Amino acid sequence: MVATVILGMLCVHLLCFCVMFMLISRRLHGKKMGMEVFALGNLLLGCAYIMQLLGGQPGWSLISALNHTLTLCAPVTYLLGALHFFNRPVPVLRSLLAVAVIYTSAQALVQWTLGQEARQALLAASCALLFLGMASALISGIRSFAKDTPVETVVLALLIAGIGVLNAVKFAFILQGGLEALNMNSRFQTLFYLYMSFLGTVIPPAAVWLVLRRLTDELSAMAAHDPLTQLLNRRGLLNGLEQHFASRNAAPAHILIVDIDHFKRINDSYGHKFGDMVLCHVAEAIQKSTRKSDLKCRLGGEEFLIVCLGLETAEAMRLAERIRAAIAQIEIPGVSMHGPIRCTATLGVSAPFMGVQSFDHQLALADAALYRGKKSGRNCVQWAGPEEASVEKPGDQAATTLTV
Image (cartoon, rainbow, N blue to C red; front, side, top):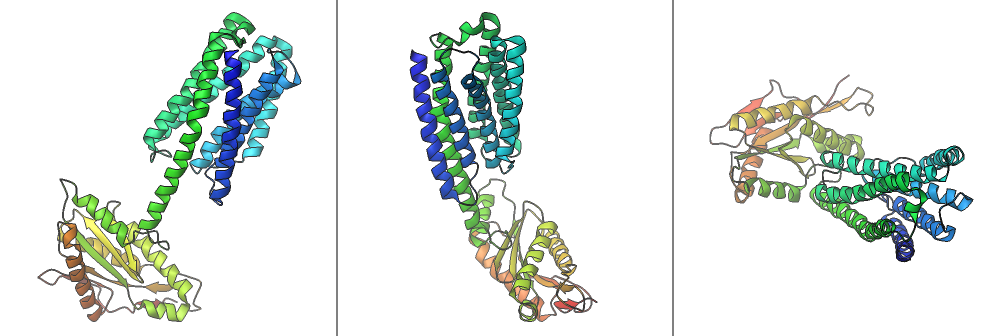
């Protein structure tokens, strides 16, 4: 009787959270993060348990067969929802239809050849393998798709592994004691549905928490990045600098200012849309030329800023020259009849500094060095130190050239 009451309450939980997930998914619009799939999983499992309550004792019937199919399809649906959440979407309805057809055929075959006990054992074994496989996949994903939520992922994996273990125990009990192991008045069934009720209470709020965390992380990333080039903006750059200098072993930093030569001429000649394309190509060249630890930022307009961490001045100058050369090699086809469009850039390099409070001062010095580079002919690297150091290419190239 206790297990029956718990199962009834679990059905209510599942259907209520189904409605909640659907409401959340409707508010998320484009990127639903699997909420609508989780809602479907709750609906399938809730319907399966309702059929179990209505069907009475285990036995072969249309309701029993449908109950088993829905019971297995529900965790498969949760798995598909997790794939959607972790940005690995697969077709939901097609996958579920395939699982339903295959499993319904399998349980009918087992029922007719091996009997009712074997069919019940098939469901317990299938659920055990599925849940334990899901738990293992989550644990292994901590270093890849779930690296941003390691603690939450481990807790979720342990909870899922628990229901996998209970299904494995149920499988063993069915093999030993037959259908008596499924008696709703048994201690095991009470324990089983108590744990399922616990999961039904804990996991849905946990899924909502993960969605909220994903949304807040994305909002934070949007607030710290330039929407066009996906480089850091000034706010994101300063946050990165603060984290760097907060470390005990913080190394000196250099500022590299990159300014695209004659960018206004590019916009006037080819339009702002093409100008945006040039900015994206330059941002890509900067990304490829720098290290992962370097902070890359778009200051605005045609100006970019790189803070290279832990380099000597000579190394920072070589990095600046590498960036300059990479930008000079950019070719953007399809706009001019004369051939691909190329652009160049002038760079100013600051002296080394050791704190966020020195950033604005060194930025001004690097900007002054950049201005000297513009005056000296552009397409060069200029240092802001006491001894003028610059790397220039022989022969002044126009900032926007046409290569036939």
